[in-house]
Length: 167
Image (cartoon, rainbow, N blue to C red; front, side, top):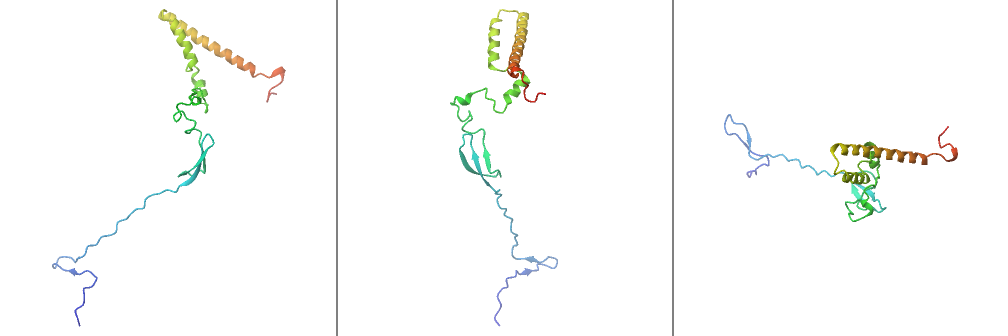
């Protein structure tokens, strides 16, 4: 019989009486290849403030997004637009809340009046300037009270009729 060919099983040799059996071929386990994380994306209809719409793929599950501030109505995107430069615009009521908390001393009209008052005080001593400042503050509060009374008179019912919810 002819000699047999080498078997596919690795040959193991004994190097000495005390040495363990060593394989001739290298054994390497496969490394784990992780798949890239790709989250599910939804199709979303974005509606801008002027009514125009476009579709967008996003991870947000909301089907429709209505934008209140976007490139059409924000002064950062349209710096030359005069209608967007209105400083007194109070969409969210933040300006009204600020005025309720801190008063109207931050308004531009009040600061102009205060500057005019300061120009007339240049020749006054420190005590006189403090007195005039107190006069300015008390005059301002009187003007506010008068505005409040005028607004209250406008809200009264006409010809003695009771308003809504009156008993």
